[in-house]
Length: 274
Image: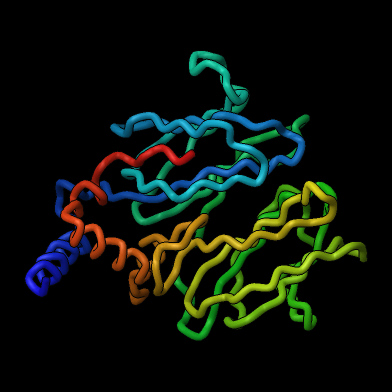
């Protein structure tokens, strides 16, 4: 077992070493989201470069995929009505240019009448060890403008308009009761949560099907711990000089090596997330 762990670390170190000329193009991360409250489910397609076309079936409002690790390059994203043939002209299309070490969220946003695809740049650089980093993705039409903060009065962001995304900001880590409320008053919704030190988050605010607001916390990058569900902790947070690579990627790499499949796991084409 000791020999296998040693071999795993050697192989992982080789993967984390500076890119060779043959691998100079690098890779980045893309995830997809449906953030339009009155738009029916769609099938989402992503293609480009040497990557086999990815298809996400029946993506409904509020859905956000895991990050896909993609070679640097330009990709097209298209949305079609759920169940429509792949040959059907897409309802919406856009392009995303993936840069080495960068991460993006491609989201359908706005009301159905003026639906659009927007490319959000995700800043996965890790904050300090005594800080957390968070942004707000506003996808609630019930609260066209809302305020977000702690139940104790600490503000995270005020006046966040529908179909907009705030910049990331650093906050104190620890236990929070995040409060989202329409600006000017109205029914508030609370989300008890813990913001981990050194982690990066997106707070997604949705319309609750039972009325009111539905805040969801997605982890974008983690300093330590296992790979989270939903938003995925990725290695992109370690691209800033002096920023340690998130432990989540290290643990995932070691696990893959011990399973005998590090080359396949880290270099094979991304699988479709449904």
